[in-house]
Structures are given as C-alpha cells and as structure tokens.
Amino acid sequence: MKQLSIQRGTWALIRFRPWAFWGSVAFACYAFGTRLLPGWLEKSVYDQLTGEAARVTPVYLLLGLLIVTEAIRLGADVAGNWNAAKVRMAGQSLMRQNITANVLRKPGAVPLPVSTGDVMNRLSDDLADFADFPTWIPELVGHGLFTLFALVIMFRIAPGITAVALIPLIVVFFLNRFAW
Image (cartoon, rainbow, N blue to C red; front, side):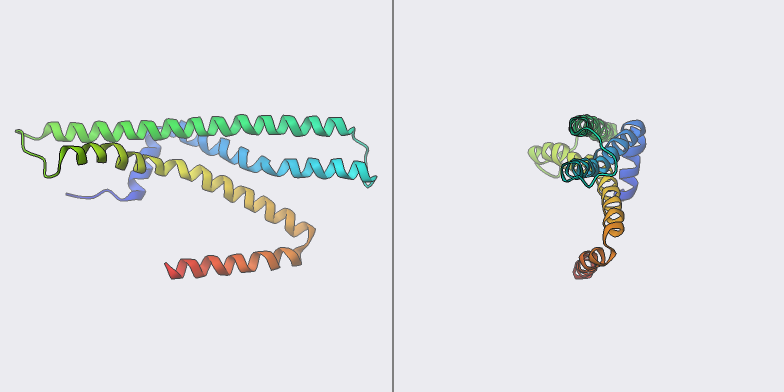
C-alpha cells in the first residue's frame, strides 16, 4: 500500500476547504500583527503624560483606541479559530468518509487484523491529529509576521541591542536543528 506523505495530505486538506484555510491565515496574521498596536498606543499615552509628545492627543482617545484595537483583535482571533475549526472538522470528515468507502468497497467480510476498539481509536484520534496539521500553518505565519515587525521596530530603536538579543537565539535555533 502506498503511503501518503504529510505534505501532500496537508495540501489536499487545504484544497478541500481553501476559503476557510485562507480566512484562517488572514485572521491569524491580523490578530498576531495587531499585538504590536497596544505597545505603540501605550507609548503615546506615556509620552502625553511626560510631555514628550510632539502632538497632543487626548489620553481618553488613546485609551479608547486601545480598547477598540483589542476588541477587534479578539474578534479576528475568534474568526480565525472558527475558520481553522472548519478546516479541521471538514478534513476529519473527508478522511473518515474515504476510509469507510475504501473498507466497504472491498469484497467479502474479512476479519480486521487489529481489534475493533483500535480501529475506532485510529478513526478518531489519528485522523484528528492529521486533520489538525493545516491549522498550525496560520499560527506559524502569524507568529512569523509578528516577529518580523517586532524585529524591525527593535532594530530601528537600537540595532546593537537587537543584534545582541538575536544572535544567541539564532545560534540556539541552529544547534537545536543539528542536535535533532
């Protein structure tokens, strides 16, 4: 029996519900990317309080923007998780349907090589694990986008400190990759 690679299987699950998947990616990117906005708004509030602000903006307006930003980000996070659940459940359902159709297509009733409980467990747990793979991609893209924006901001503030903070992380990343 030919085994399906993880990459091909994941891509097939993404193609099964592409709009839900890309919606999940978009909402995750927005939710993770806007985690930088509260820091900028808080900086503006503190600049107002210390008198270092170039332009006076009412503090209540900044606090209102902070609340609105967090509420919208929460909505985007919920919408992203909703789309990810659609992808996961649709993929699980598709794989269950394909396995059942394949078993029923075989001629004659043959005893299973494993116990019935093991078959049910595999249909439930293993398919759930595999159907979960596409839902991690939006998380990785969102975290990557957040990291990129954060590094750009850090580099604009203090390039030396950014390098000192980043170089050990890169070294540990590559050491970890080679160790495994």
